[in-house]
Image (cartoon, rainbow over all chains, first blue to last red):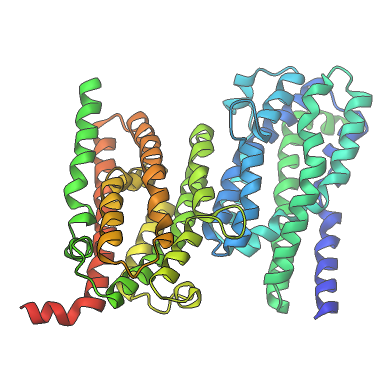
Length: 234
Length: 234
């Protein structure tokens, strides 16, 4: 069983090559090649994802009969919603919006959110709501790959996008510690609950699906904010 | 609008006459007329409800787009699951099980849970999962009626069922303060979100449905643990 579990973890980690850190839009971002408007478009669209994360995690809680898992998983909702005004990841993302020159209102009311982003995020929420909860936990494991991306993004923002108030980057800084803690718990859960080859394959498929969600969001954002640039390159 | 809201609250409160405090099994309980085995049967069956409450509340969170509501609603999950070993309403109910002479195992593994109780509780979870979240909040308003029942039950248990270790009654004591706090929040939410006659009617219907859930559980418990008595009375 030990080697099985190691192979399984290896298969999960191998999904890193499909993580959105390799998406051209993300590569351009971290190379400092995005305009102010393109950064704003990304922040405003990505907010739709941030805003829906607590509902995704609550769907996992709602489907999860294991009290021990729920007791730890609920931390994610508390982190993202916060427990009072001015707290939480959603609030931190709104402040990022202000730091890049958007108003809270135009981020909050989703006016900039393009259909492809909405479809991808909604698909993820529906997945968490309707699929076995362990698969939804597996889907969350993109957090295994997040810290490297976050660190690179922080460096890039501070180096290339000096017009952004560094105080606005608190969301990324918080995720540097939250994501590894969350990923460690999720990995414990999936290795405990996914023992058969079939269960492990479905866990890897769920993580692959989640990579598609994140990638597809960047495709839609690229089309909306870099469309003419891409045509110009062709 | 003020009178509308008052009428609406009145219609909600009027559902008290359908609350399970009037069920013959509950009346017998509070009159001290239940046997040890009947009390045990009630505790073991009611556990299935307790155990599923966090999933019901997480379903409400999952369906609720209002962050302010989620920030307060999540308290219910924390109360019922607890945040560590030995904490929470589920744990308190397991201790009640021990206090009435059941083992933790036989309560936890649901061996005593009768089909009618399972169907009623599952219907409530499905309701919270599939109906608009405000209706599920309305359904929770049986908590408006709970404190009176809890107070009466505590008195009855201490007076008539002296074989039960009073330490096992902590669940009921906790609910004396939690239920009014929770009901107050739920009432704020439904009066804010249910403004049209149609919305208010659906809220009252949801609360009526919840009364049916609780009543139906006691019907099934009565049949299982008092069946021969009832035949004897006829």
